[in-house]
Image (cartoon, rainbow, N blue to C red; front, side, top):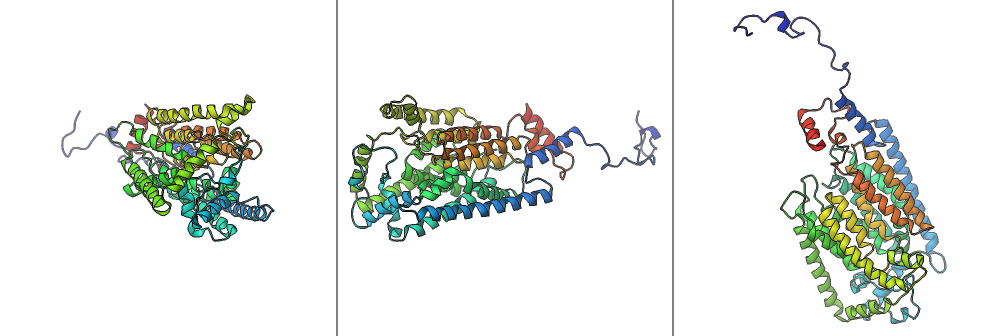
Length: 475
């Protein structure tokens, strides 16, 4: 039945407001299931740094206090270890500086007397590519303690900067934008870093792995997600960082295979062209400068050194590489060399499988990083610092989702197990496995996707767009 123009509508067809009946208070109405879910996701997903300002402030103060105490402890223990006789800190850095001093004197960075019969995996000698010693020549005349101080400060600043950038990058950005997330991520990272044994040992020893969270973090910044990609400058910088890391330690070079084979799911466009341009350009530049400074002689010496040192006994409890650990388990040290070749093939195959079959980009990259750590015959317990950027990205992108608490707990247990490596180095592998578990749980399109888009208390009722997104994602 319709009413003509200007004719009043029947009272039964009018709204309550038109009939003088007050509307129920919008604030007093019971929340819908969707809003309740959103409020729960906001509280659980944000965790310590939640919507409650007092609670968030408390945990920020706690993180700041732990960070200050942790870094002071790190500095004091480093000073104590450095002043022992012989020094128990900075010995890896001293090897690099000695090699740089030999280069500065016109010689080879490699000391033939350092390699003797009965060589073991734990013997200390310079075995890096020549470029490492050549790069350190300008500072080789400075005291070791001074260089170690700036080494630790620079690596710590690099970790902090990288954590802030990851919170804003596509691969680490949560579905619900949280303005304070970069700040909170930096605080949490600075609190955890000085108590994370793989990183702490790298800093105390002056090992170049202390810089890998920053270098490989630049690579993580190049990973696209949610239809978003990095800028060209970011991609080139990430490629350059990967080239530098590979020039220092060799094993990160397997990540180039991952980049070359990895595509963007559901897209024909290859997203890593600029990254590989950065890798190739930087690698060519590094090699050219090295040859210009020292000629081909140091590189021939390097190949000879690799040949000699390849006869070393690889089986040692501190060498957590699978070839070493399996040889120890079988009580046959001679098996380690043959097993090292087998696991190198497994590492490359695993990199290929991860690049092609693992859909989530961060998880795929995480598997490739773990594969790179078993590529060489020796894997020290501080190598897993390469996974720090992956863990940070998993934590940041899970913020605001219901599974965020499980991600945080899993990463916390991984952190504890990594610290247990001080007594039992092989537990490092369990810690790495838990990082990958946390990465998988943090996936944006997991079974708990409702928490990504459900509104928080401040957001009010869900919009139609938000509801449509939940329906699409949940299918």
